[in-house]
Length: 566
Image 1 (cartoon, rainbow, N blue to C red):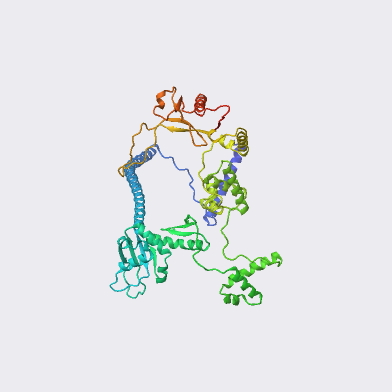
Image 2 (cartoon, one colour):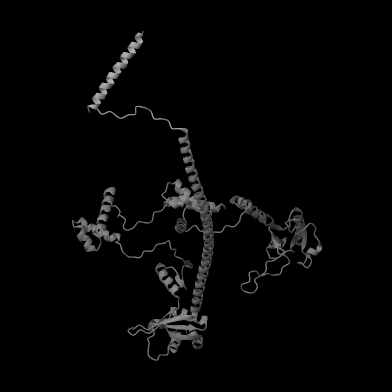
């Protein structure tokens, strides 16, 4: 007998079978396509098939690994070969770099030698031309005797040597080839045998009335470099002469008031004369203010209308700023270069440098440039970027600073000890001279009783003098008693009449022996000290030596001044 549960299960199964049959019927009718799906899961592969797959995969992996291993080996060999090639190329490159460096060093050496040779050749050419003079203005003739004509002119301007001039003149000829269409006579070059005669003729030619009357003139035989240099310096010399200064040439150099003028490359010289003056622009502006057009006035004065227009704008601004009460004319042309410091700031800097030098703490050029940079930062001035990079002012600024302030110059200071610097002041010096005046007034010393004493150091080995030796030898010796001598102190006293006492020696040894001063100055004395300097004991011996020769008494007192060197 079936239970209720079994009956219920059968009903559900029958209902499900009926639904599936209707679904298949609907699908078969073409109303809804159903996907094809397996009704059973796939069967599992067997163990033999798995082993075959594994063996196939292992064979494939082994073959691939062998191929990769072979490829890695070949690549390793190639890499090793490339490494050797790169090492060889690097070695060759380093060798080439070394050779290039050697060639560059040799090239620089040869360049320096060439420059020295060129300078030497120029000096030799300049030296050889110092025996020559050029004569200009003598007309050319056929079959002329240039030597006789030149001697006649030289004798006319330098009659002191008229008898010897024919023998003092060596070679005379004209310079260059004669041009067919040229009417200007060629210059004559005269070579003298005597430099003294040549200089005498040259000095006499500068103020010769004979040359001026005949239209002749002498000139120096200069090299090409010297002529170009003189052309460059001539405007400066001409300007100095117009200002009343003494300006002249010596070879290629120009001297103004006894000092050589050496133009620097950093100074740009004006190469043109273009530009309009302020006076011309002021007159043109007045014409425009009379209701004339800018272009017509500019055309009448020969100036650019844009320049005139800008001048008028600046002039009107100045008039508005000054309310028409005599305003100044606006500036014309390029303004001066931008200065880092104002005039007041530079005066402060000059005062500081002067004060520092006066108290023996002067600043070197490099320290001045550093100080200028610090001042520019402190004053918030506009300065070049190069100052910030180097933390100091530039060399150009320093050169311009010295030229703007002629009271400053680069000097080599003398070594001064702190004791001397602190003692040498107004109070100490004044006190000394007051005491000296009191002593002279009280005792009334005569010149023979006024003595001055000082000491000096004498070395036992003197520096040898210059000798004549073979040129090119690196080292030349001179025989002395030793390469480094010992210092011997010598004390000497001299009175106002010029008389002196015998010297007193202090030898650098422990004990003094009489043979130390053998064959020395008569009646001289000596002492010994390990350092060679005069100490207290040696000073007392010197006082006894001084008193022995001066013989001071109560009636004839001696004024003795000891020059102390702190």
